[in-house]
Length: 101
Image (tube, rainbow, N blue to C red; front, side):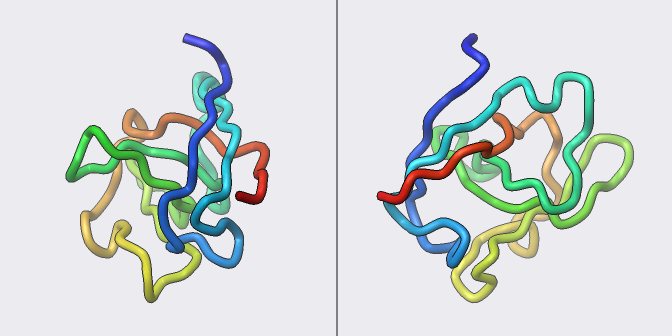
């Protein structure tokens, strides 16, 4: 697997940080030796649809291997308030570059 991947932001749940149609470069190996930190913007597998990916911000880490993720646009985000804690293994990687769509 390559260390970087490109994803397209599908909705406005991360506005104003990311907008629908933006592209993000994700570092897939970011959490091989470290844990996600509060404030990291990550791509993760949708806990309710494994064929979809979500872009969210880590709001809180919970031992041993779980995180709370939230969208920056709380009013338009389906996140941990809806589906609960997310396993770190569901995180694809950390967003490192954004390109406006």
